[in-house]
Amino acid sequence: MKRVAVYTSGGDAPGMNACIRAVVRGAIYHGVEIYGIRYGYAGMIKGDMKQLSSHSVSNIIQKGGTILKSARSEEFMTKEGRKKAYESLKEHGIEGLICIGGDGSFTGAKIFYEEFGIPIVGAPGTIDNDIYGTDFTIGFDTAVNTAISAIDKIRDTADSHDRIFFVEVMGRDSGYIAIRSGICGGAEIVLVPETNTTMEEVIETLKKGKNRSKTSSLVVVAEGDEIGGAIEIAEMARKHLQDADIRVATLGHIQRGGAPSAKDRILASRMGLSAIEGLLNGRKNVMAGVMKDELVYTPFEHAITIEKTLSPDLLRMVDIFNS
Ligand code: ATP
Image 1 (cartoon, protein in one colour):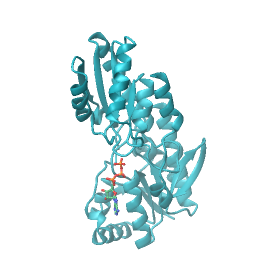
Image 2 (spheres, rainbow, N blue to C red; image 1 turned 180 degrees about the horizontal axis):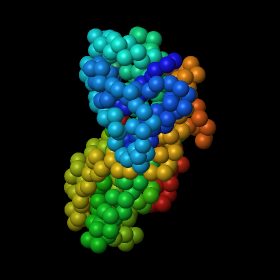
Image 3 (spheres, rainbow, N blue to C red; image 1 turned 180 degrees about the vertical axis):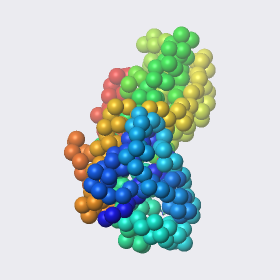
Image 4 (cartoon, protein in one colour; image 1 turned 90 degrees about the horizontal axis):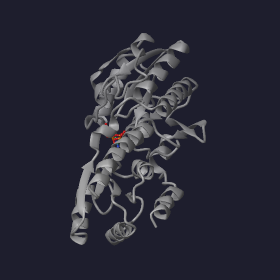
């Protein structure tokens, strides 16, 4: 391969820049031209791409977001859209791709490879950590640290006013951010989509806390929990705990931003280099990941379809600490 391109797609995640840098520097080290495609699949369709130099990725390892911008593209979901993307890659002489994104981006990459045969290697960039084939995804560690620092602050005010706080963190389909930030923030309850905690159990635990003379209580809720979001759950709790002062905090997009943690910078750099070297060594239709501290490649098919389960010992710990 003489010329390849890199793009970021789907939700942004801290560490994507460190990954881009690793891909660019790795490609240049191996004597291959590297292009950056802006705005993910939308930019690929429009031909919004240019060659990157080693210097173009200077001073970005510490920055959140993505210098290549990210986007969601409806057009790429159609065959005509993907054909346009293929034609614009051909026009620019691009022979292989590195996709930094989540499961949606890898689904698109897999379909694109199957239709047009262009080799693609992925690097998992998503704060959700919901991708099989890697213990952690790029951005997850930073997002958890951001959530913890917010939760610590909420605990201070909750404690001063003897309040119960329901804190909503990101995670539409997975409770990874919730369980880890909940444990680190000393939450009394953590509600995740993977387990079926009932509203009765929530009330019971909060009452138990009050009986143990706890002055504040914290419930961390993953946004996709089956009972509902933090606002709905707090509303239900108010009906059962009428004398309690119940408040809600939704952390929202702050979890996506900020400087990547040391762990994310290392992870992103390892995955970026492994992705580009894999591509140049003939790998395709796979994602680069790190499992048990070893670099591994997992077919897109498995990365997007195999469910990654939450560690049962983490869930058990929350119950034991608040029993
Ligand atoms: P995150 O999990 O952080 O949101 P993601 O990569 O899962 O990231 P998505 O919005 O699901 O984000 O997907 C990004 C883009 O991938 C979509 O906007 C679309 O262009 C492409 N894509 C997703 N699913 C498909 C599909 N089935 N066919 C073709 N393209 C797809």
